[in-house]
Length: 403
Image (cartoon, rainbow, N blue to C red; front, side, top):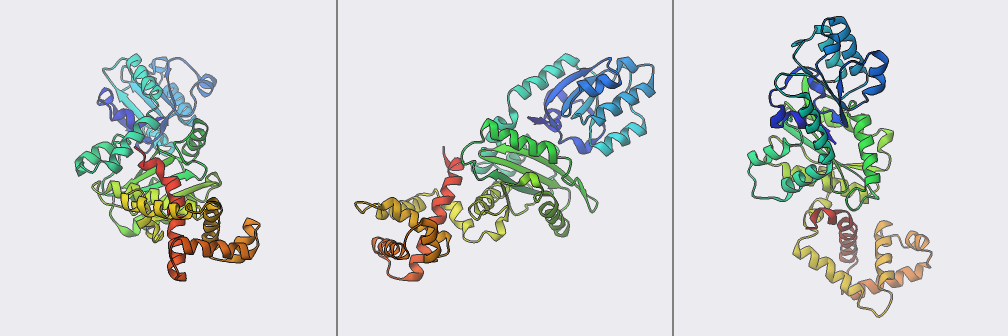
């Protein structure tokens, strides 16, 4: 899936003029079609939501009122955009412009292109599955290519949406706990449903500040990138509060986790922002919460940033090796360790959850302590906690770090 702005950023569409509905440039394009002669019921039936409609308005060339009615019917269908070749009309009435603005449907004019070329270009783009293939490669480069300068990062990010503001950039990473690898085709339909149902709910204006948003898939979930044309901290906080209280609490997000990175100004720190959103998402997944901000995830911020570095690999591997050094029972020891940490070091709750006697749990914890050569309770509990966070965190972060 691609957005209207994706196409307008391509050279073929460089001479398109935006007449109205600029706030809908982030609309997702599902298909494309040619409007030529259809009237009322035919328009309703034949031009679905998300269609990029191309037309000359030939059927209404001598009847401006009929042209207005056709355009309103298309807008009512929530098409992604309407592109008009300016053979018969090169402007619109204020009534239609206002209607397009209110419904967030861009109306565009173009002059010198063949309609078939436009339709073929859009269909080819959609068949290439830009939504997953291109966005994955873009985010992979933005996050892990440390040789890029700020301009190169901006150029990459604008391939997602050429209309992003650079004043302030925000990012949320959204995923299901069950998705630990790349999103499956079946799961992708669920993510597309979120985008489809909620893209018109996200605030486009707040306290005289304009916002531009884009959803884009990456690895096991999707990013929501939001930008605005202010650096005012109060406005940014108000936007984040509204997103948390009115947007991410909606029923459609049941079963999903949302991680939020710290806002940045400009694009130079986009790598950190995107990683922060992923780390916050991972932290709230482990906590079985719905929402987490990077600023609030504590030691997870450090652990997740380094969990696949050589030192942390070695630290994690040495504990695994130590617990596996006994002739039998290594899986029981690891399972007990993880349950023990989950229940906050409570022996009774751990025993109940594992259907074991409390003395069995005490014996296993003591054995773990012996194998790790730790005879201090504070040090033991902190070691077990760090191991547990690494163990579960790596499960969700592996897909990002795998080459």
